[in-house]
Length: 221
Image 1 (tube, rainbow, N blue to C red):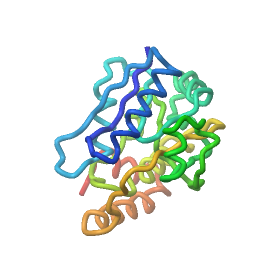
Image 2 (image 1 turned 90 degrees about the vertical axis):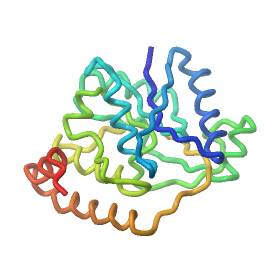
Image 3 (image 1 turned 30 degrees about the vertical axis):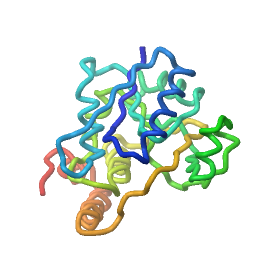
Image 4 (image 1 turned 180 degrees about the horizontal axis):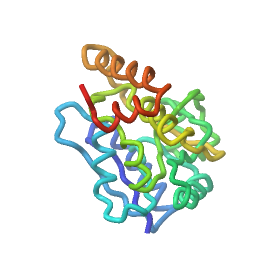
């Protein structure tokens, strides 16, 4: 059995993508058990959803996949990441190429085209979509910061914390993930500005393991 943990709050434009993700797992990893997680936050909180999902796992050494509801992995890199995460004490990203399919590419994929053959835009520096980790590894560098609300920066901050506290970036595996099109969320306004300010604190703390640990574990405001 493989636990696949999906942050999820239903929105009409995202349902088709999530159904496609579930179909992919049913086809390629039929032993996978997909569970969804949400928080009580009024504004959708990805960090909180991911932390709640990891906290649901009883065995701190179980390897799990945290998979965004709109992002389809490739089988080979995913299985390689699952195997490696069992002993590495690092989070693994089962890709080194992030393909955003957009409306055209997503339509092709949903019509049966293999994802690698769909139109796409390459997203440079992507750090989200699919994570592979044990709970022990996830909590060793603080999980994700739930002060990031709405959209923006939570993945970048987590990546910097991993680099600083664990001494290296999350480990990538050669391959691609495919992000499916849906209605985009607002990336501006007061909450986005607060997220950006918190990200600045992560950047400043990245030069000191002690400073990062204080920011991550003490969650001082």
